[in-house]
Length: 373
Image 1: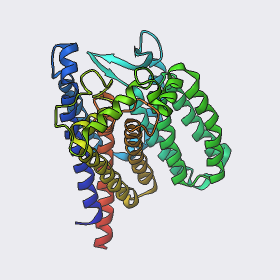
Image 2: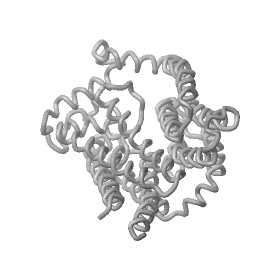
Image 3: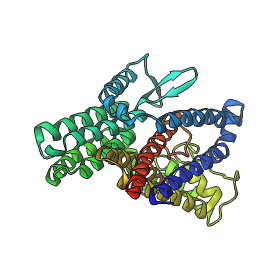
Image 4: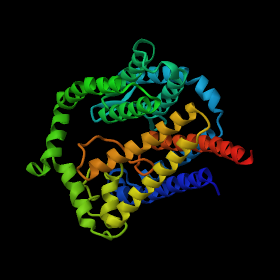
């Protein structure tokens, strides 16, 4: 078995285990809450299984899709995604919850266009950077157009408001810019120029200022702004090495908000202990490592950039979610890839997995041809 074959097996295997863990932990974390609020302890589990099956179907389609056609239509898909982002902001068209307007409601299920925007931006920028390989230092024809696309997409996501997704999108784009070979001076100017805007965005809204205060001093107000992160600490700390046992979490009993979505990692730590959370981190490391093998063995520059963007996206989201759960980062509201409850995010992750499988098949064919010659 060559390197790409092993990477494909590890990539798919690690993602499959993470999805299976997610199914078990979503039921464990949400059953009591679902019974209290919905009268059905399996309410969120049933909906999650619909998302899993939908994601699996779309992931299979992505795994066999013609990447050249996806590339040729990436601009049209980007325009469509931008239109969706505009529509979701219109009252009466987009659905709001908790002060945010990010979703479309359809037959009782929510659809969040920004989750799929991330995949489309990766495809578009990979095509754009591949076409501009000979002029990456040209500010007018390469740098500014790329920044306009990134700024427009990130800005529309920020208006929802969804700072976490906007930041993640920017991080993935910067990763692609750096890997493509953007001038380091240009990259430095981009990052430094973005810092004041990011600082303003983090401090402009009262709830974001409270999150920053809670990040630095959660114990100063454990029943107020620091409540969520303090409960996350308690969940992780009470788990010890081996955990209190599957299904025996105390923090999920209406103490830790979003226990089956944003803070499911904390429930894993409480029920399965340090060994459980370490296993999750290890699985993500395996996924990223095997993904990077596919990146380096991809058959062309475009495929390399797409696979790097997809691996980077899932890696950044996992890093941010886990960082928030352990108090290393301010609360962002991002789900844990493949594990957290959340339809659009899970489906987008499974489509990304399908695309990586598609790209890995091309890399495998290339490697086999090289070995045969």
